[in-house]
Amino acid sequence: MLRTIVTVVFIAICIALVIVVMLQESKSNGLTGTVGGMADTYWGKNKGRSMEGKLVKWTTILAVVFFVLTVVLNMNW
Figure (cartoon, rainbow, N blue to C red):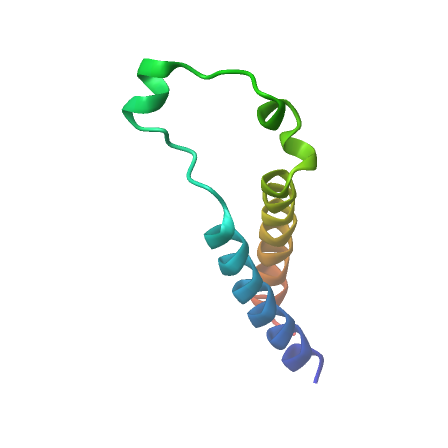
């Protein structure tokens, strides 16, 4: 019974992780970033408090939970 509950939570974490990763902006600027340079803007300085910063934090949390649940599900119990 416990294994079934952990499996359902694992599937929910997988779906949430995919959604959070898909919502993030692309990190590559292509030639625009190399030619124009990276300007320090208000948005860039406060990235941790922005929506992008929250998505990065949630991606990290979900990835850690994903790996922990993967190990738990692969144990022989």
